[in-house]
Amino acid sequence: MTLLTHAIESEGQGSLQSGEPLTVHTTAVLLAFGADPSLADPDGRIPVEMADFYDHHPAVKLLQAHISRRAGDSR
Image 1 (cartoon, rainbow, N blue to C red):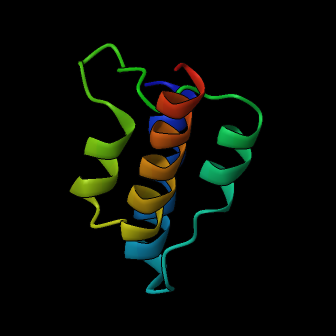
Image 2: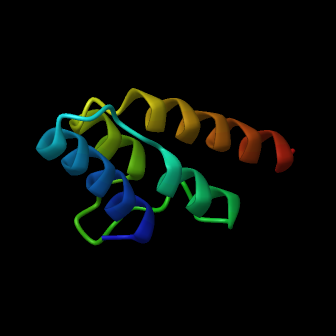
């Protein structure tokens, strides 16, 4: 796993196991420090796919915002 897919999985599993709402703190910190939201893990999963798997809508929104921002920066 990449650090970003691992963070999303940890946030999703933590919520499932504790019954607490999903958080996006770890994902946000990794993105703020430059984690690539489009980088696939060794199994070919990209972070947004992991977020979709866990119905982690806050992470999906955050990832999409970073992907859009990066696309705008590369123009």
